[in-house]
Length: 470
Image (cartoon, rainbow, N blue to C red):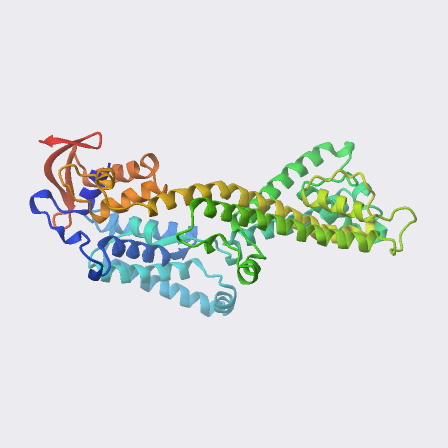
């Protein structure tokens, strides 16, 4: 396995140069570090383009390459890029002259036209061609040096996207039940002027999957109710995914600053059991702190609406135990609906149940990653304890004919040992891609830059093992 990876990055055995081996720390960065830095820089500086812009650029470049009869139908010359730049520049200037608001919209809202994206892409492509002194392989350049972004900037973040979906759900629910269906069971008397509040309350108890049972669609509208529940589940999944993906913790800064409590604060020489206990305690402590804080808010609010000093109907006051009981069944999204709530609480519950939905999503995300993080910590601990030995060299070495362990073999073996990559899903597809690029026929070798072709070393490879000279 590592044999092919090493052959990808080293010279043939007949002209071996060991300049890529690490000899001392004084030599500065290794070739692996320089390669990783270059790839990370390229990935971090990819140009954002909308789907329409990427598709239009690829289509136009393909047409130009076919018209010019290039040797490679995926190549575009510098002269062609200059013509494209002139075309897009004139289009952008013309649009701004016809509509002065476009410049304001781009500056303050970040909304660009397709032509503006294309102009930026061609400028970046021209810079790339000048650096490489070669034609632009446009399909590869678009894939590696650009990334797809949404046309609207506020839709590029998963949490912002989920927030807009939830807001739309809260707006459409009162419209459906209170304006279109005029369902009195949900919205009450339209003349009361609070039907929109009842509609939003219906959206909150449905979206949070609490469902107290105090508002229902009714048997006469089962088909509409069925469709509404399916839509609410989709919206809930969107909200849950955003909360779990963000791993947002409003108390994390408090933990680090005042409690000095973080899974990264364990000393390097601490035993593995202490590190595992620390990360488990930190994650569970976060969940518990959020749970307590959220329920405290619910209890205090319920005491305000249902306490003994509240001016509500006689006999509907809650005790402290009932307030805690209601708060926990709300934050856990259970919602038995076995205690009577004051109508005055509906506005508070609209926001409180949304917080409960966020809490459940955030908790599921933390619990899902806890096991993975602990396994990763165990692998990291074992890897850090490794020392130079015959066993380490033999286990990490890919070339049986060379007793040395170079930096490329060590990096690949370390990534495998740390669980960052695996043979089936990462190494094999990469090597298959390399073989297809090199058009290899089962022998070791390398891709030569000058001749742009596969140079064979004459050593046959079968089933990822060297079996002898051809």
